[in-house]
Length: 106
Figure 1 (cartoon, rainbow, N blue to C red):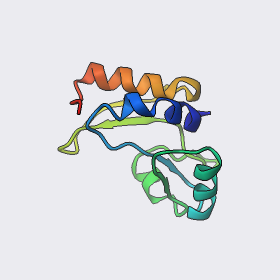
Figure 2: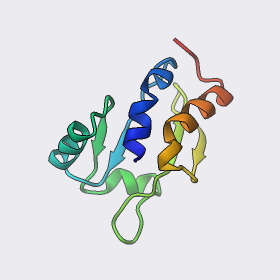
Figure 3: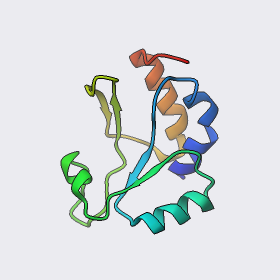
Figure 4: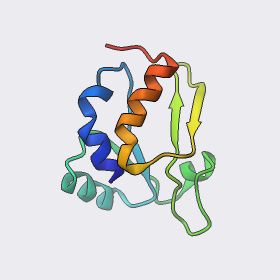
């Protein structure tokens, strides 16, 4: 559902000068198949060793990653962490928050 929400909001998201992606603890092969099945127009990063998910504090005891959204500026500063990401509205929420944070537009 989150992938679909981001896919469906691609035009609005891409009006900002940003790079965006999803991350998953699944393998590259699983993520590639998932991206193709759901027609994701953005990268899905694979973290099967769970290094990144541990580093960002999103790895749950069950081995899955929490659905948090990190807003990081061009200098690498984390401006906001949305710990209440809603899969169904993730695309609209992303664009609204980028606007609020003053992310530049193309």
